[in-house]
Length: 71
Ligand SMILES: [Zn+2]
Image (cartoon, rainbow, N blue to C red; front, side, top):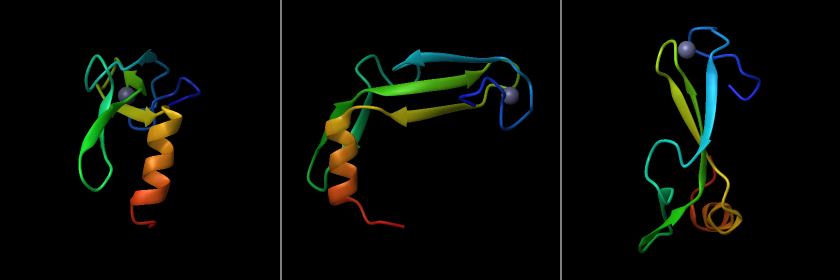
């Protein structure tokens, strides 16, 4: 997606926007007790509609690395 090519349909019609899908102030990131908004970067394909969100708020990335179970 980040290279402009959709991973689902293969079209080179990917667009990008900060907090594009999920909320004007980002996504709710759960810390085990409550959640706070974290900035996200959205990549969306305008051919098939597939999209991805990446958490880019460093504080929220730290919360995830500390509080969530590692897979
Ligand atoms: Zn697509």
